[in-house]
Each structure stands twice: as structure tokens, then as C-alpha cells.
Image (cartoon, rainbow, N blue to C red; front, side):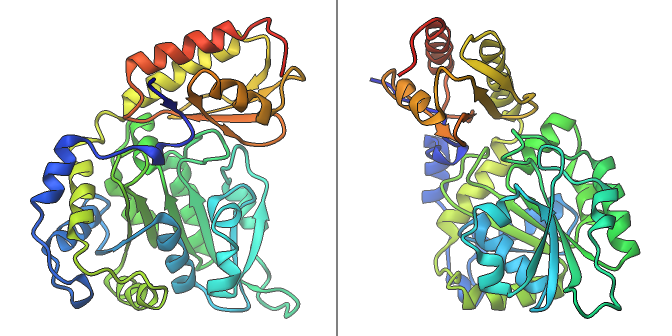
Length: 346
């Protein structure tokens, strides 16, 4: 029986064409700087976002943590949303790796405003406070149900950072989803951000990998940190090839994932077991159940129908659409969600 796996867009498997491209990759020892496919991926990604250089890493957590450590030091502080991935889901890495403090902002669906950023900047002449050093944005916002920043919003926050001489980092876990939804191009990002983490293993469908972007000096420093974190890979070109293929072939199709997420939203808005659905903007659907189900019980009920989902809290559930969700699987899911109307909770 086919399984509809809506837990995350990280569950995708390489397409046959991607696998074939990976097997043909020319490789070398990347720690020695000799893997041509890794170099090609780093150069292509940097050029897309008009940044000077890139650094291929195993995961988005590693690229984020490297960036944070490179931008900060102990006794300094990072401004980010309370729901952001770097704070919630990276294992306490900010303190462990960088020894930095965190100023948590309660943004709207995971998004900060320029006023909120400015309000959380510490006064430099007060020794009781850490020194504000870095602002981190997440695009799209995972716990915000896939909400995204537009370039205009990013530009306004960047202006605040420049005014106060703060670095600005982007956790671009699903940045291509954001760009697709906003109908924007990535080139301007290099003007606003000091570093960008680009994940290849979510909506783009690569099996593993992220690229950290920044200035040449920043990437040189980051490479040293990557080595210390155990992120130096050898013949990594086989993995980098998947990222190259994804960048060349899987960006334009992201609107299909967004359309499928909207279809799920439409059915959930009519469901008598749903209290609220966060407005769907990209490929993430987060909804709150009423007292008929708990999040865990609803996920168990879906599993009985060969659908996998994530419980996001006591009454919250998350769906994420991706390239492995076929029309057949989508139709099955919509039928199951509709059939649960009027049923007793488990």
C-alpha cells in the first residue's frame, strides 16, 4: 500500500534522473579543495544569490551553527524569533558552539518586524547586558506555517541592522519556496544578508546537504569552523551533484507543492474537527484541532489510513507537501480528511 508521507519535505528520495546525475559526478577530496562538483555547487549557489563564496555542508543545522559562531563570540547576543529553528530545533547549539546569548522575539507567525529588531538591541554602555551582534531570520518560517518574508520586508530589517552595525543571517531552509510564492528572484538577497544558509534537502529534493553563503573572508573562517565541527567531507561531489541537479530542475516545480498545500487547506477549513488553519502561503499546513482529537491521536488516526503527519503540539498538526506527493496520494489524503467529519475521536 502506498504511504502518503506529509511529515516533512525532508523525506523525499532522489528521482531517477537525480540519481543518474549523482553517479556521473566527477569527484575529488574536498578537504583538500579538490572536488570539482562541490566547487561547482558552491559557485552556482553563490552566484544565484550574488554572494562572493559558498561552503557545502551536510546539513542546514551545520550551516546555521557555523554562521552563528563565525558572527558572534561569548558575551554577545543573537536576536531571533522564539519559534525559529536555530533556537528550537538545533539542540542548544547556539550556546554549545558559540557561547552566545539569545534575545527571543515574539513575531507574527515566526516573522520579525524592523521595530521588534530595534527594540531588542542592547545598549552598548550597560555592562549588565550582552552585546547585540547578530539578527537571524528564517525564510520560510517553519512553525509559522510556511509564512515568508518578502524582499521589501527583508530590506527594512537589513536597514536596521546596518544602522546598528549588526550582522544579518538568513536561515533559508525553504528560501526557494519563499521566492516562488513571492514571485521574486534571489539576486537581491546578497545585498541584504551577511550570510545565507541554503538547504537543498527539503523542497528541492536532494538527499542531503546545505550551502552557506557569504564573503570570501567569512567563508574562509567558516571553513575552519566546519572542520572543527567534523563537517569536512572527502569525495562529497556525489552529494553535491544532487544539489546541482535540484537547483537546475526542481525550483520551478515548487508551485505544485504550494497548490497541493492549498488543496489540503481548503478541506481542513471545512472539517468539523478543525478549529483553525494557519493561512497557507507555501508548502506547510499547520492546523489546530478542536477537542475531538489531540494532535497525537489525530496523527494515529491518519496512520490507520496510510498517511504520516507530525504532531506539532497538544492540538496542532503539520502537513508538508513535496515532490513525492503525487496527485493520487493527494486525492487519497483529501478523501480521508473529508471522511473523518462526524466521526468520534479516538
